Image 1: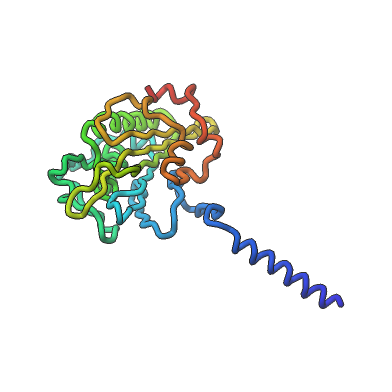
Image 2: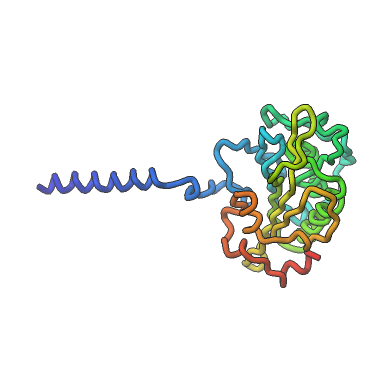
Length: 264
């Protein structure tokens, strides 16, 4: 009788374990412990590329990254130009670590769109290899020139200002596609984003501060505060958890007592 009860108990526990494994969905699977804090949630079928200074997910249908993530430290933000760092538009190149299909320089030629950095070259001046890799098309999207040189640049600058006087800033950004109103460019048919997002996280005195930005891919020159939204709002638009290890409460609000020092 004891033997029967013992066998029955083992079978019952086994059934519960199998049921748990079957019902455990992808949203419940924790991020790998080795993954960097700034890396968003991603699927196993995404083409994840890891370079010296940034991590990216490259989309072979749109031919632009779904996201690019990096950590901006005080040393990186304050670094001067490394030798041979006078890169121009001719330095953009195809990423040797990314499989085909992928964008190339010719796709952007005479398109009327900038080769817009996601992780900016100014964040990579601390190391020549990091600088070279920032010019891979893995890190590039077609951007409106005025937006790229004004609104987007101002947001990049405030990130560096934060890193210069605070803890490391965790950053993830990428394109937003809604109605595909800009079509495609080049023979490769690189898709032109409708807008862009950027999300920031920084821990100060044990408290995580977060902020998001959404910028339309059109002539834009407003100050960064005009584009400021919660990280939750960005996640809702793109359908992705940007900081899987962050407290959800920290992503739902903007603490302007903190951010007003940097976001004007």
